[in-house]
Image (cartoon, rainbow, N blue to C red; front, side):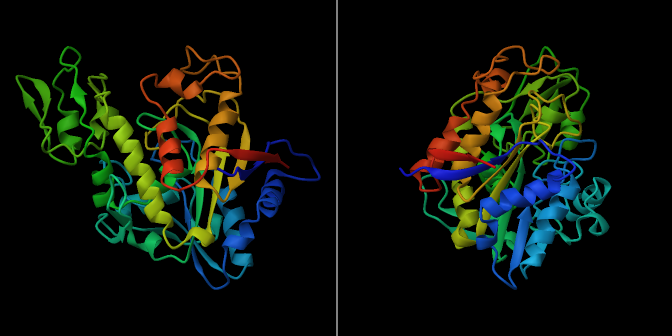
Length: 369
């Protein structure tokens, strides 16, 4: 398979070139403008961050990207879809409120913020892809109906995917609630009875009403469980964990096939940017941000969603691990930081599957500006 081009910028700046000017130079070299058609509606897909989280991409970076798209005669809007789990982004009202609190107000980003799957996550477009695990994908309608798509992903660790980059930002992030359920439905958490104190927090937060208290211990009904993982995040005692089995690889493959669906019809009008900054061990869906596992690395851009994630993982793994983080192993340059945090998660599954279904290539040429 032919190697794809991935463009990389470190974060060194000077009085002659600040980081926003340097970002524009990166986008020049990566030819982002070719993916933006005049008068088109361009969805800029990002993660606005859960309330209490601080690791999401800073709004002024999104302002730079939106300004560039507008300067090309197109109409940009910042967007995400509602979460499956109960939180501060579970419906469009609280999602928009959270986005504004985290700095994504129009006065800052100079672009409207649109939650793409409706007020309760039920607005979607069915996209037929006929893949091995997903035949029809349910994509957030406003993203599916946009003319172009720019993924702006915060690259970090993730409990089920190993890391979250472009593929997760698109495959999971652009899915409607129905689509998210389809990807998660084979993953059922388990309760560690010895740690459970019967507080009931998981019962109150369960989106699928699948958890009840039996003999003062949480019990999960696997048939009702939608696999959103909210109970894992909400438990104050760490009593609920993912069932580490073959369902994790299946979830990654479904997520990758959903990325294929998101990009269907937009192949020539899509572009991908990963920010390798504040590389936390877990997703921005948490209401807090743990210490980064490596120092800030830079920004990468590409027209290949598989290549950009492969390059991002390689760039992170080349770094020295942060001793003040949760990393206990994998601290040396070249050691796998994501496997050190999640030793039972193989993050290469999403990349291998993406290559197999024609989403992109794991081979890449890294071009440093």
